[in-house]
Every structure is written in C-alpha cells, then in structure tokens.
Amino acid sequence: MHRAVPALLSLCAAFAAWAADSPLIGREAPDFALRASAGDNVRLSEARGQVVVLSFYGSRCNTCRSHLAELDDLYRTYGPAGLAVYGVSIDDDADGARHFASSVGVAFPMLADPAKSVGRAYEIDRLPTVVIVDRSGRVRYVHSEPKTRGEPPYVRELRRLLDE
Image (cartoon, rainbow, N blue to C red; front, side):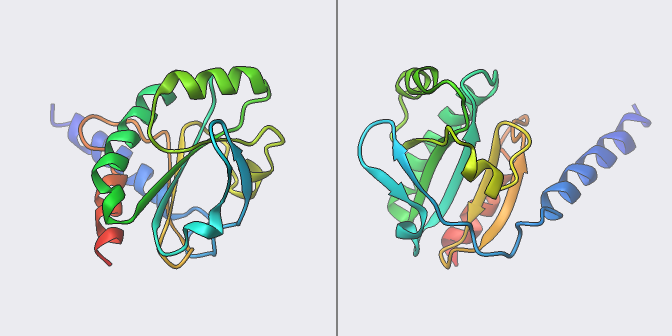
C-alpha cells in the first residue's frame, strides 16, 4: 500500500506536466470553420467571449462516447454561463462520422474534420483530447485521454474560466 501512493502521485504529476506543457498553451486558438453534422458551419472565432471546449474524437474510439456524454452534461449545466462545446471528428469515413454523431445524442454541435486540418493545427495525437479556450480566444488547457475516476480534471479549470 505504501508503495502504491508514491507511484500514484508520480503518475498524477506526469499527467499534469503533460497537460501543462502542451505547446498550444497561451497561444491564440487556431481559427477554423467546419460543417456541423446537423446545422450550419461553425467558425471558432464566432464563439469569442465564451469559454470553448473542443473535444477531438473518433467514431472508433472506445472511450469517446462516454466522454462526449460527460461533456454534454457540462454543456447543459454551464451553457447559460457562457460555455460553448464542440465535438470535432477526425474520422476518415464521413458516413461513419455522421452516423456516430447522430447516435451520440448530445446538445452541442458535432463537427467533421475529414481532412484533419483542424486536428493538425491543434496537434492532436490521442483521442479523446480536450482543448479549452478562454473568452479571449487563447488556449488555456489541453488534456489527452481525459477519462478518470470521479470528476475529470478539466471541470475545475472550466469553472475557473467561467468565473473570470
């Protein structure tokens, strides 16, 4: 038991260091315009003034469905306080991406990035990845594989940004 605690603390520190060391942190979020699976195109710069969560996912990602459901709960709770959430699919298969997006049943827009240009701009290498953009359009947090026991680590960060 005593050996497990230092190992767990080391793992948590490594995760926190990765999230803090992303080269995107502090930079202006790369703007984009993508088609929503239902509705109009979405341009990131039009959400300026809101805290934005970009959740990069793939239809073959096992944890992405539950992750998007968690984000939907956050969106429904904090949307009135200025939270915008966008799911960004980096699937090659456009039909599979559309089917997945419609089957998830979330209230926020699901966007398609079949050319992966937005994924490259945000340096996405794992799914799901969460990028949090502040009200001024700067990337403040990046989390890869945000599934944890209990409350995801980015929820506290979202609350902090919504209070700013």
